[in-house]
Image 1: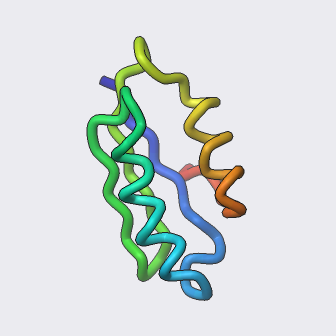
Image 2: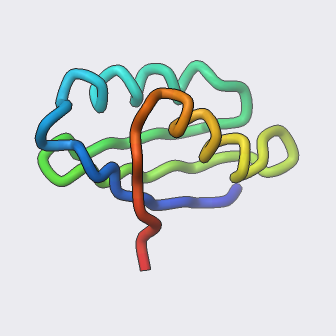
Length: 72
């Protein structure tokens, strides 16, 4: 399993979209766990890289109209 942490930049202004994102991510095959902190926009994902690539996850989030930054 791989892990990925990102921060949704517009989390404070768009809480509804952030809450919906968690459910949507869990519906994707290969994502084992998605935890989102709506207060600061932190998104922690656990995924199976044999089933889904990180680039696919990034594209999915961007298609939802959300911008983000990677955790450093």
